[in-house]
Structure formats: structure tokens, C-alpha cells
Image 1: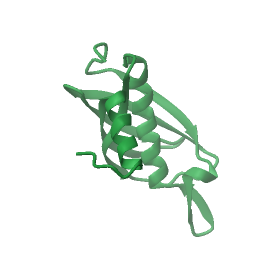
Image 2 (image 1 turned 60 degrees about the vertical axis):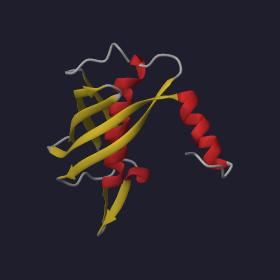
Image 3 (image 1 turned 90 degrees about the vertical axis):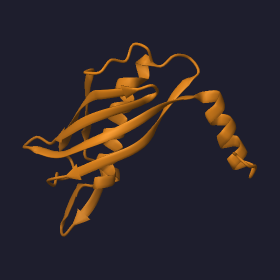
Image 4 (image 1 turned 180 degrees about the horizontal axis):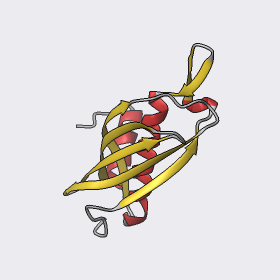
Length: 132
């Protein structure tokens, strides 16, 4: 993760599919949970090549504003910028657009984890053990 720098940018384009949509009257449109997944995956994509073996990443928080509808079948684009690094905590600012206008914006925090510790904690939880 030493190669991550404030100011790094990336983007991703998705098609609004049935899985990412909700119904609004007679129409199916991009849902807010779908947009949340989209911004998380865009930040994940930016971080992934900068992780070292044994590291992973998890989402901590998403503050999202869904500003306009996008019909199913249309393309959406998320632009992300890494705006802060605090040890292992990464903060991103994102903008989401469809083919016509900006449809959303978000701030998203991710955290770099040690996979061995993360998996041990998850395994203990699955087995019903204390994770303290």
C-alpha cells in the first residue's frame, strides 16, 4: 500500500442491470443500494493493485447522495479520487454520472487489513467463539 498516494484517480463504467435496479412506477431505475455497491467497487479497483501479499481491504463507511434516476439498460460511470490516507484508512470522494447528467456523489472510507488476522476473526465468529 506504500504506492497509494493522495490524488490518485480511477473510474469504472457499469450498465444498470435488473440486479442493480428498483421499481419506480412503471420504470426500473438504478437503486441507491446499487449505487453504493458501484462506488465501493470503484474504490476497491483503485486500491487493489497497490496491496502487498497478505493484505486485503474492507469498506468502513459510505455517505452517498443519489440525485437523479437512471433507467435500466443505461450506462453509469463512477469517478473516484483518493483524498486522504491515515495509516491504513483511505478516504475517497466520488461522483457518479449517467449518459445525461451527474446522478450521485459519495464519500467512502476503506481500510487495509491483514488477511490472516481478518480470516482468524471471521473463522472464530463462524464457529461461535469469542472474537475479543
